[in-house]
Length: 278
Image 1: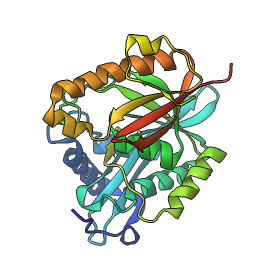
Image 2 (image 1 turned 45 degrees about the vertical axis):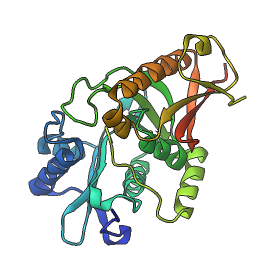
Image 3 (image 1 turned 180 degrees about the vertical axis):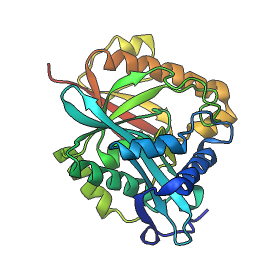
């Protein structure tokens, strides 16, 4: 379905007042489903915004909410950081670059506040989000969390749990600046649908015991391009992808590897992991 909106028609700004924050809650239910039990309520959106977080929306000409980004700011050690908790784009506004535009809005606000590190989680089996996170935004990942959100009631999470990689977005870095130049040069950059608010390369692993005994200079972990379609067609195969990739990510990240890229090729998404300097 072709988008019914254009990016230049939308205005991205902080949410204002209870009605706009309630609209954000409604959009969460559109994206994650009516049974999703981890929606962020208006009171938390307001409180986070008031204390240095971000609760911003993209508004269509008719005043409706086409997408939003939400996160909280805090302290890690002796530095300010931001946790980007949710990003969502409604179906008729996908494919026009709105997801990227919301992240750029978030980045600009945080840089003005002196915050340079942003974290969020994403499902490594969701290839579309992962591709955007690494190839377009320039994140890296060094931490894998098992079933971090538990049972959420969302059909998006059913059958595969809520394992997540933790994205690190160093928003003032040259890496991020270079990736964003690429984004701006590509007309109609793709947008993600939802994130809670996305890697010697020849040694591909499916997480088998034999593959995990190797320690090549760089390794690859592959996932299907559409895990939701696979869930519908072959739920057992989707669950097996979770088991296999969990084993592989935990093995390599536990040994000091860093996920640095995610590239689509040969009907799969391939994460590239490299060892950190000792």
